[in-house]
Image (cartoon, rainbow, N blue to C red; front, side, top):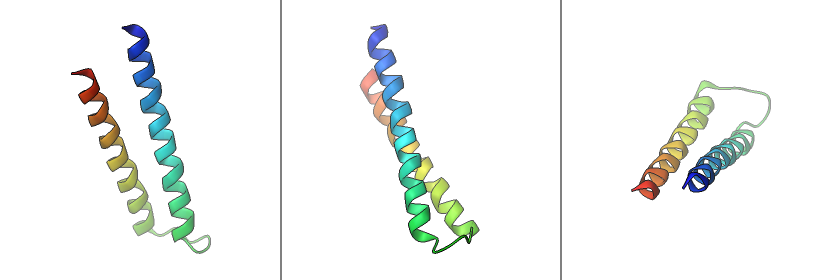
Length: 64
């Protein structure tokens, strides 16, 4: 049982890191240069937030 919990936690961490990496790539694609606009930053945070919610919901569904 503990092994399953550890696998779920590791899976969640890997998922979050992967989503963060994807958002970084998306951010670099959208920003044509060194300009760091608030809109892009908000978009990046939004992508991370949605991804985090999806991962958490998936993990909760796995538990029950």
